[in-house]
Image (tube, rainbow, N blue to C red; front, side, top):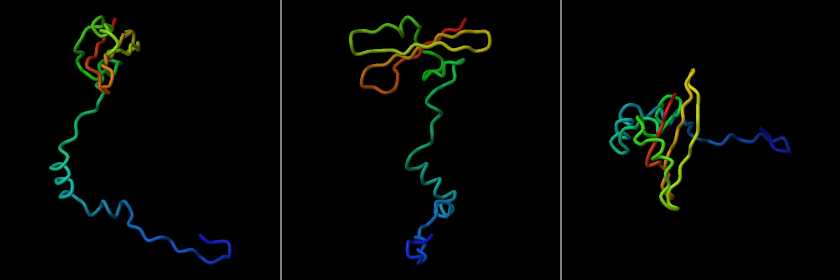
Length: 107
């Protein structure tokens, strides 16, 4: 690196991420587990091709599509798994990011 006058610019001194993390080791991992807890499985579960949050589904397709007033909504989609076509649904309550129910049906 150099500036406009040709004087070599010094490289900033920093501790690299690998070097920083290499000193953590098993003790640091154990401390992290103690502080933050164990990791959980992925948010979405693979129910056929739907990747539903709740596996197995915890409601029927008709229950999932039911909206009670203006505070619930749902997402409905289809996907294919081999020769099967699956209908998938996630039911939400406004203001809550995680669905309160999942549904799926494959035929």
